[in-house]
Length: 181
Image (cartoon, rainbow, N blue to C red):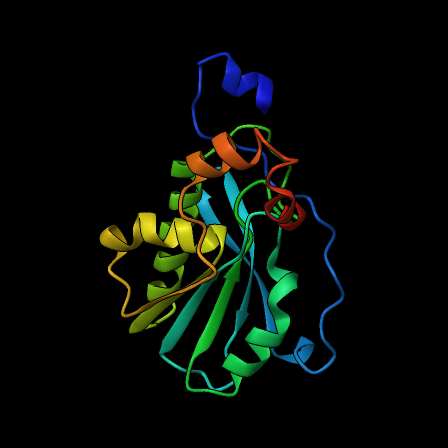
């Protein structure tokens, strides 16, 4: 990344996280429906649809930069006790989706838009976003277009460009931030 940024050919490109999946929580597992969401005619992304009460109200959960859908199961478990269903998606190049070395923010924005379409096609009426870190950043980028019923940012990352140019370029100075990666 450092060499790429130094070449002044900077374009926000993301290498998806292939962090291993952790086991499904034993209490949450029976509530999870594994789904594939079409994001293009030839590509689908993995997602978990958790809706034990068959609610028309949903939360679309957007995970952090080095996470996948398995990393936030305690939150899904708590949300499953409320009136909300949860759709947790893995962005293209993340989780069990095929690896990709050149994902753009626009690609992930299309993943979110396809997920909203999936929810609406499934009968969801009110759809909110919860974004953690990088997921909050993506949520902020798309919220004007998708008009969520609400949007909650958890430890938001302020900018991918800032993160790449500052944190990744100076890992010794930003030890704490690098530990998050």
